[in-house]
Image (cartoon, rainbow, N blue to C red):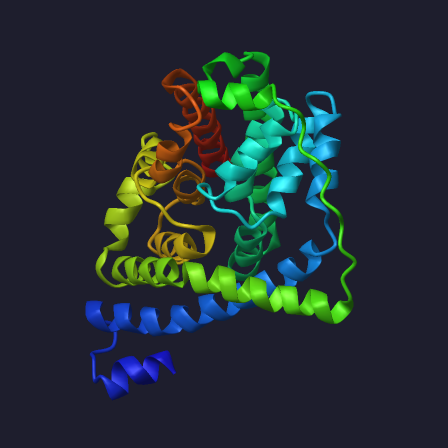
Length: 315
């Protein structure tokens, strides 16, 4: 259908820059939207069986290491972008969860969320999805452990430190949901999440279409190829100022790989976009002092760089 629209209905020339870009646009738009809808519905339905209050309490009682691992895994099943995860980050601190453990959640929830994994699996196969999940959890755990060992609580803003000394939050009653109610919640989740992110998806597909149609393969390979030492840090530097979610950046990842970019460099770009975005840093400046933000960004960026070089070396 995409080829019929591009080359017959619009009468564009096959193999031309514009023709290939338009065909990519009409092919990826329904594919990504349908895939995202399916993934969000399934994951939201499964999340109705998870009680966040119990998870929060479990994290507050675990020792460092195990708590970081559990927080990272919990981050995978929470559908938050880097910015919307900040309020839950504050809630964890308020509930007595250690700062290092909370940082592991803050890193994992945008970077290794279930939508990213579902779409990586559907587009590139289980091996890449599993490698991405494993390295992302490793970054989240290690970052939280390092920041926790440094005891950086004094670099939280004063109003946050005041909240930490307040009485713990009360329990939230767990509602018993019937199966139809859980399906209704899953449908509502699709409406909220897909309805919120579809502009980002279209923007990402448009950028991917431009890369697919107009950027020469040799040029992209020369920038983000595995044989260049600078390709991974360059990918991170390009990704940090951008802001998107996993679904929105996936078409760009697909286009970069199709143009010869190395897998490690491309995944480092993806991790930087959704895990170290500039808007997240601006929001964090309201709850953290500059030194703590710099430590957070530095530790996570170092982990992303190591993952990028590792993927380029082994794949």
